[in-house]
Figure 1 (tube, one colour):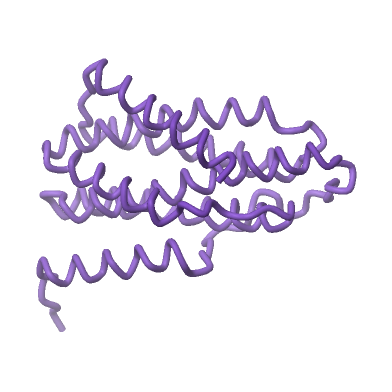
Figure 2 (spheres, helix red, strand yellow):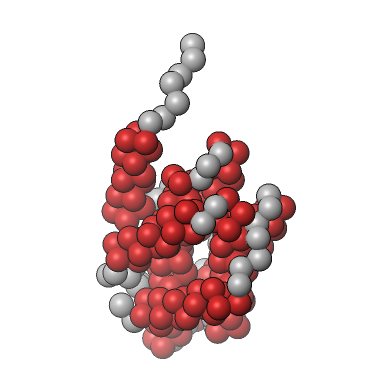
Length: 215
C-alpha cells in the first residue's frame, strides 16, 4: 500500500512534536552508553571536580539540544528526500548523545540547562536560515558545525578529571561521531563557508557554552 507524501503542515507538525520531545521528554538512545561497563569512580571526585564535570556535561547536553534543532530545521527545509535523510540520520545519532549526556548529568548530581527551550528555538531558526541558502550551503554549515563541536569536545577531554572515566568515554565517542558527521556532509557536497561566517559561528558557540556552563 502506497503512502502519500507528507505535506508542509504534516512536516511542521512533526517538527513541533520532535521539539517537545527533545526539550521535555526522556531521550532514548539506540546505542548503549559508552560508559557502560566502566567501573564508576565518582566517589573519587571531590566536590569541585564533580561540579565541573556536571557543568561540562551540561554544556555538551545543550550542544545536543541545539543539534536536534539544527538538523530538524535543515531536514524540514531540505530540497531533496536524500538530503533530508542525511540530516535525519545525523539527528538520530545526536539523540544517542542527548541521552548519554543527560544520564551522566544525573549520575553526577547536576541538572540540565534552564535555558534549553531558548537554545532549541535559536538553533532551529539558525538551521532554517542555513537551509534557505541552498543544499550545498546547508551541508557546509553542518560540516563546519561538526568540526567546531569536535574541537570543543577535545577541550572537554582535556578539562575533565582523569578519574572521571565514564564522562571521558562518552565525550570521546561523541567526538568520533561528530567527525563522521562532518565527513558525511562534505562527501554529500557541502560547500566551505566564508571565514566571517565561521567566525560568527565560533562567537555564538562561545556565548552558548559559557552561559550553559552556569545556567
